[in-house]
Image 1 (cartoon, one colour):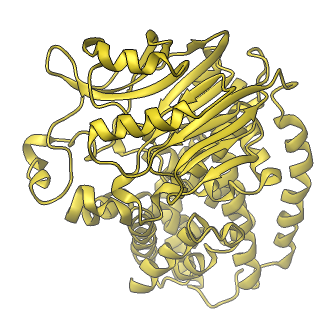
Image 2: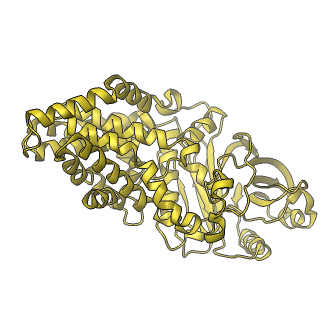
Image 3: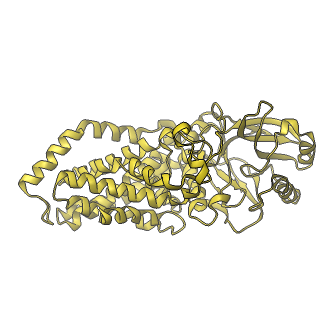
Length: 476
């Protein structure tokens, strides 16, 4: 089981900061060989489960300041879908594994992507954020298609290593042949007029008043920007009751700030606030809150975590849904921090007419971890999926910008301070990528495939493998 835990941690090296994206094409092989060599079906289930727990422990280690010891049960509970993957890996001894194993993996990712289960962090396909040609698959089938293809290639290589049939390696060039059509199909449409954005990154400033002043000082030096974007929690006061702060913002032009403050009724929430010459022109309230960081699930039972970690002392109030703001004629969809992990929010923004997606983030709690670059990398995937430029302004880094194909335009790491100016060319509002039109077809097809197979037939097939051959190092 220890080996399975370690094998589960290995694929996380494909994500930032190690950023060994190429490793994702083979990092699952040790885990696959372990579950395929399990002496029984129950052992395959347990090894798969441990693999999933190891994956989540490595991918979410940086949450320890927020959730403390709760990370271990979180990894154990949400590692459960990999038990089915382990059973499928042992049961499927032939060519069907090339479809079944990727499908089971994607179904597991799809299930844990539900906000109630914590959300879609470290979906395997996001490891390819640095490779635009591969990332083009996301424009066709979302991050789900990327994950499917990665698991398919890993499966083909594992089958070849077990000497099942080296013809399965034909799956690898078949994937490569899919990339040029995906790249061609991925463009959302012709690029429009240049549009200039400045991302303000003041660094770790704990005092709300000093943080506001730092953002103000940096923004005052920006020229020629159509929009200045501040990071998450950049304003610690309810602006509707702070005319003096609105007056200070009036001299900066068009600014999208982020308000983390109590309203007149004493409720606390996070809001993207668009101001033009100090006048509020639109507002979006964060809808999908960070578990433990912004609310504690089942607080009556788990509220004690706030006493031993940096978990939320009180729950923030969520908004009621997304919105598109009119920034002097440019439709912009604001997304706040953790929300950029959700593919459906990007699609909803496109459906609402957005031509640019703006992410406001603050990762000061996790500055020395892998979390900031992993979070910024999500913007590249959302850009490729939607065919919209995506920019991210972070208080403390990473601030970044990507064009409508997910190609990196700017990157300010955690140690940098100041303004990052970038010129975008947003496509017209009516343009659509295949994914924006078709939605989550890939995971839904995977759900149908897995449901058609059923857990019981897979278990029976695995037990039949027990009787007929076990695992000998050479497939049938």
